[in-house]
Image (cartoon, rainbow, N blue to C red; front, side, top):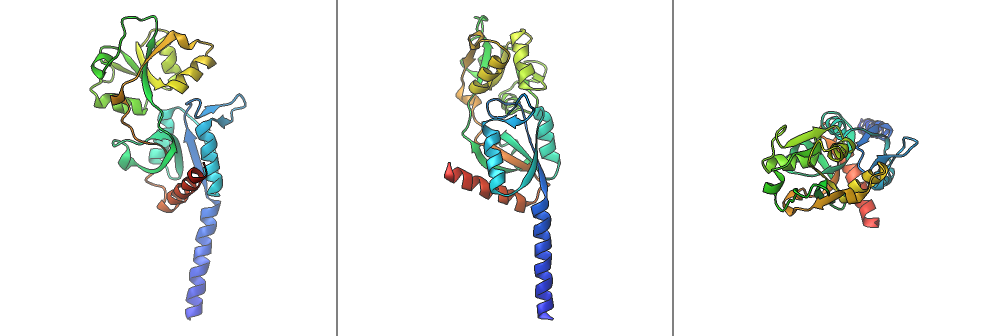
Length: 240
């Protein structure tokens, strides 16, 4: 009888492991060059993408990888099971909504960017920034940070579907300022055949309070799967 019970437990464990091994997760990201972006052949590439692939290979997890506007990727990870999102800034407002796997990359500093020709724009503090119309992408960490500082949707903060459109809005004069990172805006301008000298950057320490740059699963994903990816990240970071 004891042997039967032991065999039953072993069979059940093997069955569960088989299911888990065959499980395919969905990985989502946004267009955020040079960290994640589409190649001409529609393959998702970038610095962060390469590392995520390395981590999932280390964890022996099968996956599909897609690039969407940030708002869509964010909602998928938030509401669906087994959806892994990257690169996502960890922040107190998001903390309880996700299971975090950190750090994926070193923190990337956020800047305010304005057109260089607009001499009247000078940003030395958040109060200065609030005088201007600021463009951000939906669900981005920048929107969360600006709301905390007193910005109001539709008054001095306006939304675009993604950062490419946001940058175009700046170049066309539809907004006066946008929030982005230095590596990203340089690559976006290059992809648009525009010169970086068209913009000027303002760095404020108070805008850079988000802690780590991470991957994350929503709460519907099993803790076992999350921990498996977390351990793979530790192994990869230990070898980097």
